[in-house]
Image (cartoon, helix red, strand yellow):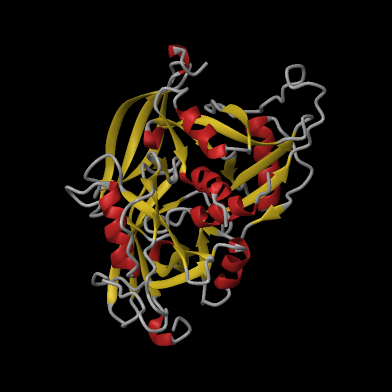
Length: 205
Length: 205
């Protein structure tokens, strides 16, 4: 059983193999449940200021048609050399809570604003076989008071080097919508979290 | 617009900063939509044989009570130094399709078997700001023919160094179940894809 000391893995050592500006490559030594020492290579972001790297934001909008929509971003991501459909997201700054980061990043990346975070996850692993990268997922109900979207389009506040397209799509049939969206861009893929969110919505219990 | 050549980012160069056994740290040079050259650090798995690193498996079971369940794994993940609740998953081997990898990994990690993959995603980005890590997500309806779970518990076929606990939980109220499960283990977190799947299930359109 997992609460039995004999079945708990323990980290014993962390050695730096290489440190770049944004990413460090480290080798871990840990003991397995049989007490045997094992090695694992891992990647850490060098930018983490607290326990968590960043936030992903599930921003929901109810428009004047009373239907629910979700705010997503599309941007070129160098690591995958493709446009990626993602939740708005960002790293948590110094002296900032995850909730504050979520409201700030949503505003900066998309122009949409929320008064508060409606729900926040515990710390989640993003790719736990490869890296320590983690995040908290916040849901925000966007304040939608524009008389008409074509008149008052929310204004992004992007940093130098950020080129982010904002899309607002209906929650209904999100999985199909995502698959159709990838065809509209040159080399476009979906972030796995967005996909599993849409897949979860499509499951009937 | 994204199909305008002036707004397409292009990868220009990939330089190796450090190569370990399982992970390589590379620096990318790309041109932004204004034609300006920019740098990005990224991580690649050295194990990829085709276009995709691995598969995640959403394995659904209908038990004799006619209720739907999902098969999840719990294991210690050295990069996050915690137990992580995940979908069964694994890397795609040489000469193997994603579908074959999904059926094989489900059997090896959990003992549960499926005849076929019922749906497979396109290639999805796992952490596209940090790494090229990608996956395809397969859904498999598990063949559940055991007379009684306590009599015929599926048998895992784990590799040396794999210590994976299998849990089968109801799809109904999955988000609450996950949050309660984390309390049952010493230092336990949820994989972000599992969380967004459960969150999607909880959303009413």
